[in-house]
Image 1 (cartoon, rainbow, N blue to C red):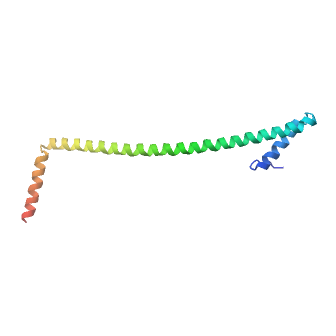
Image 2 (image 1 turned 45 degrees about the vertical axis):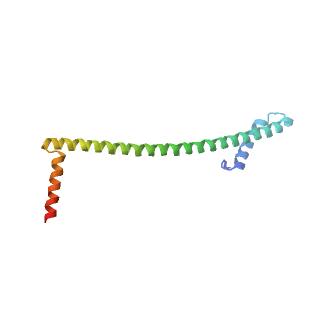
Length: 122
């Protein structure tokens, strides 16, 4: 005989079988009353447990969504900060290269303007 705990009827049958062995030692007058009350309480406990677990899992899902959105925002902000840092480093390297080769930004602009003037004349 296979035990089916996936259905309410299967669970009820399993509990009836197990508890009937325990109740046999009690007087037959009180045995049935105690047995019925015990089954009601077990059923109520199982229903309460299931409803509480559903609430816990819903809360867990909501918290996970919040966590993921915060992480996404953090990653976006972090990427922006990294891009700004890269730009700052590029500017520092450009300054170092300009200092190294002895040219400043004005000389570069003059060269660019002269090149454009030469192209306009053609």
